[in-house]
Image (cartoon, rainbow over all chains, first blue to last red; front, side):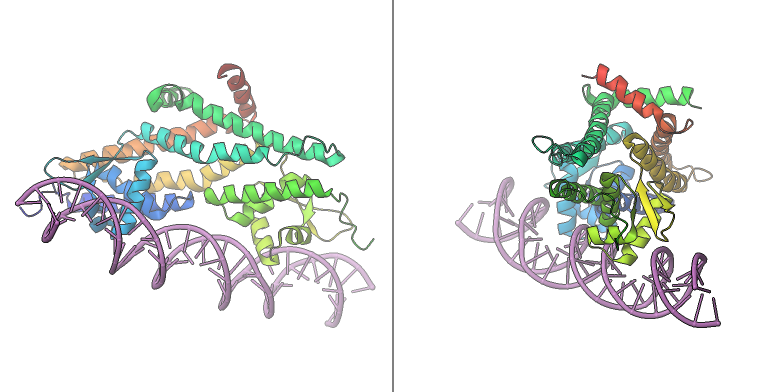
Length: 183
Length: 183
DNA sequence: CCGTCGTTTCAGAAATCGATGAAACAGACC
DNA sequence: GGTCTGTTTCATCGATTTCTGAAACGACGG
């Protein structure tokens, strides 16, 4: 055929459910500071489960080539999507991690690195300890210090859950523990 | 005096450090889907440590009355700020929780209630189990099901950490455990 | 080399979201 | 009841952020 790129034409029902999911995931992303299109592309690749190229993604989501290209690049940078070449096709293919626990681990890792770590540095810059030892200066530094401790704990918590060993296995353990313990 | 409302005029150094913190917190909020002004008002109340009225907040942050009013209402709704009246003053005064562990617990609870729970419902709506039992329908439902399990686990995790007993004490325990264990 | 196919970039357009401020509202006090 | 103080609402404005599309780029094959 002229399009050797569609191994799985999904049934209308499945397509509809996919669309619902994509819209939902896009909305959720928007609430959490992720560009809607980025969440949508990820949702599509996740729910499709197989590698897609830029043209397929553009067509399915009605987005521009530029948008798709930039967003895919970012998704790859953040480790949520992998890029691969399929032999006998010059196009790039993109594929989303299918293991939701690994996905969570990746997201947490990325956000920690991109946001928690810089935040800690900046917070330290809000201290005024050295010379100036005034009445409310102490109060101020205590409050900032509390926040720093909090962030450091979250930092350690994320390292603990998914840091040292690869792949967020501890998350799966956690899930198991909670399911027999909490309820 | 004409302004009986300023019990603590902070020193210039402290003011400067407060401003840095407020800007930082505002930026951070923006990255996490919280309106900048909301994060800033909360930062101000937290770092000031004492109750302030709308006029003081407006003046300090250079924001409009309407903005301050709406945002404060939301902060109160979300439980991050409490409203109180001071006798012999008709103004409303606002005060932010000072215990950072309680703060975290409040934030998590609010986001869970406002976002995780609705998300779960919508996700279930993306299933297509009942009649249609097709080849890729099964795949689809498995993927959505995985996500549902993931969200449910996070749900349980948050309940476990701060749900049943009041006040997020377990978070403090967690901090303690991690600090002697992880490093 | 040159043509083709695909990807990346970026300036500008569009859309979204938050902020403003004036008018309506509430209620305390005289 | 009228006025004074303070609060809330909401239509509109403004700014940030995202998306588009066309042009530049790169690389592969002939």
